[in-house]
Amino acid sequence: MKIGFIGGGKLAYALASGFISAGLAKADEITASCHPADLVSAEAFKKLGATTLFENQPVVERSEVVIVSVKPDVVVPALQDVKELAASKNKLFISVAMGVSTGTIEKVLPKEARVIRVMPNTPALVNEGAAALSRGSRATADDAKVAAQLFRAVGTCEEVPEYQMDAVTALSGSGPAYVYMLIESLADGGVRCGLPRDLALRLATQTTLGSAAMLRNGGHPAAMKDNVTSPGGSTAEGTYHLEKNGFRSAVIGAVMAATERCKVVNKLYQ
Image 1: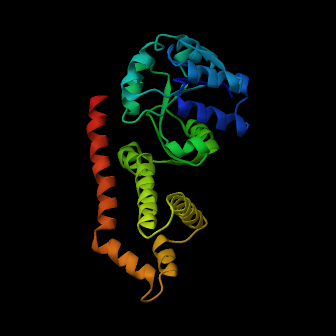
Image 2 (image 1 turned 90 degrees about the horizontal axis):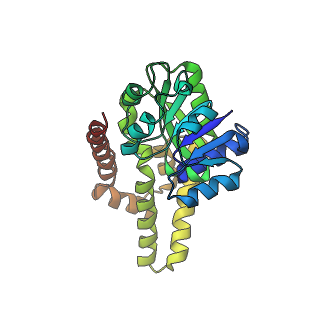
Image 3 (image 1 turned 180 degrees about the vertical axis):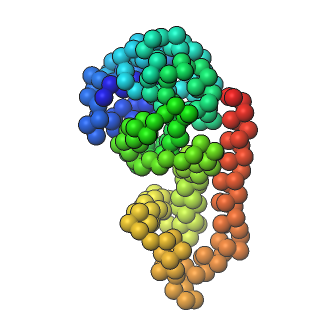
């Protein structure tokens, strides 16, 4: 599959690496356009064996699928640069820009172009991403299948209606930041109780990783929490402290606040 990237940053590089590793594209089938000043990203794509350019139009002309991987405020200008190309017609464009709707993108591109919006997250950099996709008005079931196949090369991918994308962004898009804060707090707690910081951080990180792996294998987090909690034990005392201090409501509130912020940001790019 010939895949192009408009924008060649870290996420684009991670996706390209994942596509190659999964056998979805050969290195010489990948083309990326980078900002002329971003020589580091350009060199990284070259080392993959991909073609690196500093303009967008050849990316569209050389590709079957075009992934738009630029900052939200750059999406429309970047696509205006390619909208008049004959190659843009009947092409699948996949945007990974936060807050830019499929409708906004469809208004810029030719009416024959198909658009899918994907919200990935940073663990895609280590092939453990959690992504969700939404189809634009002209995207087909086959287009969604292609997009899901691509993003499953670097983690998981679910299809959702677009109105749920703000919540997806707040949960899985922003979620790594919440998890890092939890890990940091666990490690800080260990340090306060006398553990060396490097050991505390290793234990907190592995505990989080192992707990997530157990959930991935099936089961409900409440049941797994109960399995760890002995009557009158240290875990029961610790979870009581979290409940008393509003741990759940703080996390729920964070997702709700981030969702509301996404709605505000969305209006900027309509």
